[in-house]
Image 1 (cartoon, one colour):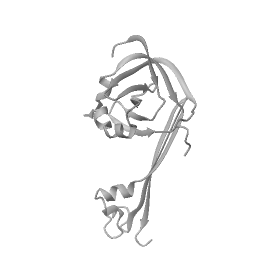
Image 2 (spheres, helix red, strand yellow; image 1 turned 180 degrees about the vertical axis):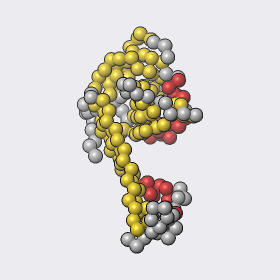
Image 3 (tube, one colour; image 1 turned 180 degrees about the horizontal axis):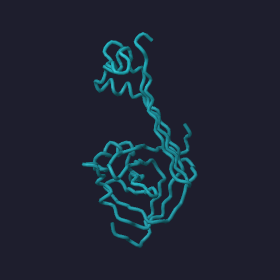
Length: 192
C-alpha cells in the first residue's frame, strides 16, 4: 500500500552506482571510515528478494566492500524518508541451531575460570537506527544473561535518487569491510 512519510531532500555529491535490478548510493559520515549504503531495488523488484543477493551486491572480501569501488561521484537529488528501525534478536536460538550448545547447557557449559557452575541462560541483541535531518544515530547492545546451575570521477548532471519504496540499508566500516548494521525498510511510517 501507499503511505505518506516525512521525506528529507538534499542535493549533494555522493558515490553512486547503477547495478542489475538496483541502484545504490553511499552516504559518508564526517571524519569517519563509516558510511551508509542505500540500496534501492528497481520498482518491479522485490526488496526481500534483492536482500538475498546482498552478499554478491556488496562483494565483501579481504576487508573491503567491492561495491564501493564501482561507484562514481555524482551530483544527486536525494529524497530519503526519515526512519527509525528497531530489532531484537534471540541469539541463543540462532547459535543453538548452528550447533553451539555447550555454553547454554547446565550440564556441559565450561566457564570454570569464572565459576564452574555458570552457563548462559539467554543471549539477545537489540539494534536501533534512526535517520533524520540531524544524521544517523545507531546503537547495538548484546546482553548475555548468565545463571548458576544451582540457580571515482565527477559527473555534473543531476541524478535523481528517490527512495519511495522498500529499500535496503547497510552501515559499513570501510576500513575493515565490517557490516555494522543491515536492514530492510519496508514501511518507514511504522513505529515499533
